[in-house]
Image (cartoon, rainbow, N blue to C red; front, side, top):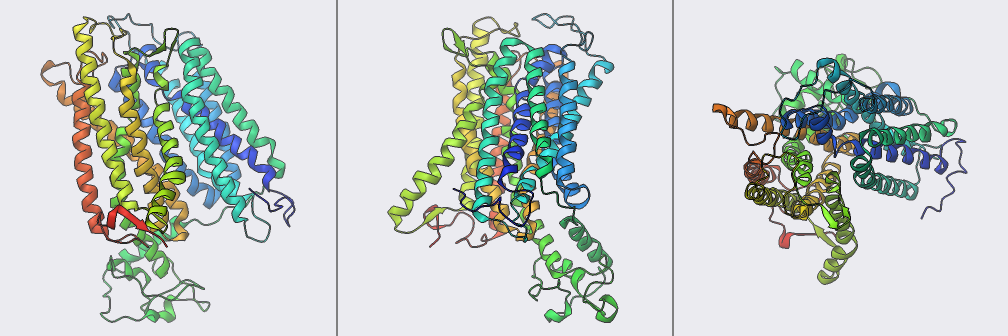
Length: 572
């Protein structure tokens, strides 16, 4: 509970009154964007007559851009345009993209003529029909990137008391409520909006997210007179870039065998420490060879591209060191990014819960989100207190173990999905409906639950563990980079998923064969594709073990790769 009177401070602007508008802005944006995603594979295949692989590629690239552009937006907001302008730009751009996408459902001639159920005589979309679609995706990604890059930090900025400090209790409450509403908006998107699309058609189903995005923009701009709008400052990125430039310029400089702290350049007011021994070649960037020439009278570097501080060098080293662990999270994101195929599979199965109600095929991801949410609450509020009570002291699962368990859950989820798909395909053949693209087999779609539950647990263990790992291992000055690494991993995973899918499709179609992943899910071997992803997940887990061993102990952690006693990490 927030008890500090934040509205009574030295700054007449900002405070708690602005936070509902900022949270509503991001929650509505997330609801609108996520509302388009689940059924997009059906829209592209059925309305634009695309092959499954082509449609999935578009979704992969769109999702990759949406996950990557917040990183670019954060750098631009911090260094040049400021957070308020970045969010405002994002609102306008995202709304424009959604209106353009909605227009493809209502304008005559915006899509090619419909195919029959056997996809005979299908007419491909023309370039003039595809351009508005692609442009809409680009605008939506650009807009979402602008909002998500600055929204969380902009809200925290409003809690500044006017003397450069923030209320810790208010900040924690803000973060909690921010993520609660963002998660709730995603749940509404994959249930209500998907249901509208399935039952009221694309015109209404795509119009609703556009209206929600309009509400997002209005929510943000209504409170404009009350916002604290800080000016942009120099970001961390130039400092890291200067380390690389200075290291290259000083590459012929020999490092002394016995150095002292006076030989290295330190930031003003920082602790005068020696640079670490790992990645020693980077130490050349902070070694002052000629202090009289290299430093100004006030102790600053005369040329930052030739001499950097020890702090900047150590920040870059920390970032380089976490990259291998970061890369192990790409494969788990690849397995989770296969949701388009999940929708295709669900649409070919019996989705009835009661005789009169069936779950929309795009809404099944709700089970993964619910598993994630329930497990977080259970782990934090029940299991950890119970384990601490049994051991007699506070304890928790180590980060290494949590991330490793997440990778194993991800591997198990793909194996479960492969088994279910093999069974579903056999049922379609036995029932004689494999030629009908829209036929429904007599098999409950609830058999997807093992995959979805295991995927939710994989996210709870690995993805949340990775985020905590970045904040634990990177210096405090790099918290902005720590918050964007997860998004960078998701973006990379979408590109990797696209490469894997294209390679599988090309190789399995050689010799005139139908391939593993054709448009007719009954004619292919999607189960083989899932088994391949299972094998890659096993290889990724072994790679993770090697990375853990090479990394060594985590900061403040006991033991090395998976050798923590009882798999628990005591903090007393």
